[in-house]
Amino acid sequence: VTQTNYRAVYVKRDGSWLIDRVTEDELVVPLSNYERLKDLEWIIGQWVDAGEGLSITIDCDWTTNQNFISRKYSVSTEQGTESSGLQIIGWDAKQKQIRSWLFDSNGGTITGTWTKRDDSWIVQSVVVLPDGASGSFTSIFRPTEDGNYTWHKINRVLDGQLLPNVPEVIVQRR
Image (cartoon, rainbow, N blue to C red):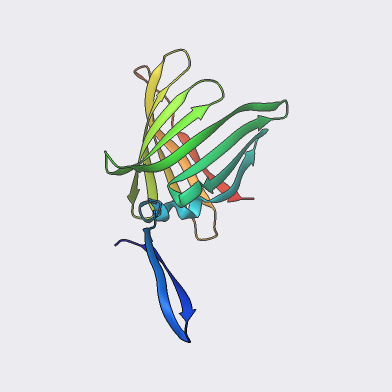
């Protein structure tokens, strides 16, 4: 479907309206991957997970044209901010799947592949730490009926060593 902008200029001569000129310009409609990402709309908002001297705040917003979701996070203790970062979630047109790219304040990166399974989102992630160590893990996000979501991390491996799972927490809307 092509959208155009149509304009006509009329002039009145001898009591009759005449067409002076007609122009038609094709409109450039920005592409959006919203339709592919809309199942993640529940994550848009401001979130907090606090307890045992640790507080994690998360701000999730759509980028312009709803092509990506931007997730900014900050991890704080009583001493101040320990780390922060930015995650971008979007549609990977080449891989035909939802992917994410996270950059943390310590210099680490995480790439993830998002898959919806029943009422949860499974994120298979690969991590590279600032010192070059690498690993992988699986995160599970599940929106809850009260507008919050649960999150936990399983199958954690760092440089070939199996690490303990991170137990499920409830992330609450601020």
